[in-house]
Image 1 (cartoon, one colour):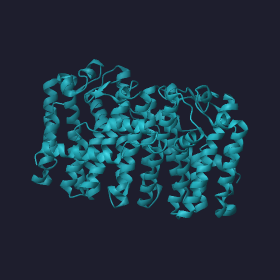
Image 2 (tube, helix red, strand yellow):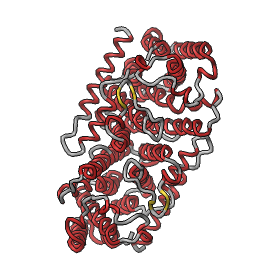
Image 3 (cartoon, one colour):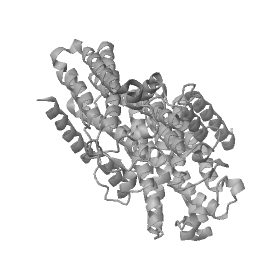
Image 4 (cartoon, chains in turn yellow, orange):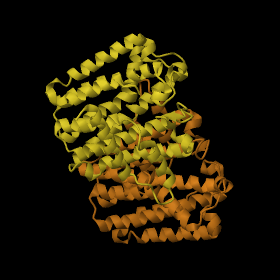
Length: 296
Length: 296
């Protein structure tokens, strides 16, 4: 199967699983469940779950457990989008071509839906269906909590907000650190979680972490390039926004050509980190290239 | 040791532990860690951790693991207060006699601090220091995620917001359901978690759940009574607020005397549920009485 067909298949499978795990609530709290479903179903490329599922395949881990782990990771990703889009944060009204959750529902419901998605991720991971070995489940929870928390995504988001407030644009080292926390931590989890599921050794895990770090940064550089030259009709969100807000972007720091060159370099490094897996890792190499070549 | 001395001792121990687990971040994300510390340290009665620690003692479970579990539960409780106080939710500017987190910091930082505390709870629980057996840690995570999520606290908070928006005051059954989710779920966890830590049998767990359900509801009725007749200088928050907001309260539905009688009845039922533990459970019985007699 080609990479793009693989990606679409995983997206469908993750969607079906989330739909089944999070059915509309017939009881009175239905509204928050509707908002959680709105924020997480039927949209997005599902890149993070794809990396979980594809890496699990590479390592010989069970697909069902990988899909559940990917679904949990996607819940965390979606919660972060819902909260980041809030008026007090980035104040975005459009996401993936749809009104953001606080626009489609209301601000209070969006806050609760984000809280609910974050909490649900840990519920999914800690259920026996994710892996028969409780030690694996506990480690999946621990690593996700670290990736999402104050020393990971939450910390990165704080740095991002502070950089905006301070009005002094970040330098290249700062922006790399910020992105490493803000988006890199979840990409790293997408590659580390399958290693946990498969009981892989430290060498395998280290190689996957190197790959993850490179594609995480490449992903962010590509995002900045899309933001600079993109078209809202294609990207599904407002473009030029970061530059307008005075945020330092990789494009500003490196120039458009410099940013493109750096992204390509990172993809090469990511692919090289997979050498030990040989031809079996070709889909992951295609995925790395896709990340910098995508149009949205 | 008397119950009140016990309660104070546990509060000090939980505070020291949280302080150690969550040191000020010297790195650039310091602000969100400061806000997490502001929202969780040096305040509150620490009732929920007290129930975890005292019940663990009753069941012969390790105190250190119970303190960590109590600290995690307190993180979830504090996160819920931070988010509930936000302008888009209850819009409160005073909590435990101090400015709420979004007043002391700002709204974006408060949203992130709440997210950080919720996430950190799962990090604490899933670390090996909480219990040597990973199956115990995974079950602690699963039960906390269920108690805090859409079928627990988040669901209850949604019902509460909807009741306000709809403008039709809730009936007694509805308000009992709402409180059972909104505050009852975390009280239940405070009693169930020690049973998990101790590997207690279903009979013990069932008795503790009955006790928890009764004190959870009694706690909320006592809150409504305090809100009706309380003094902001003593309670540390604005009083009469729920009635002003048109929220149905137990006092409105049962009258002041009726609410007091119902609270006393629930305390009796809670104490009776502990019969199987004999005199060893006397501190928990005192705690149940304290819950309805407290002045703040």
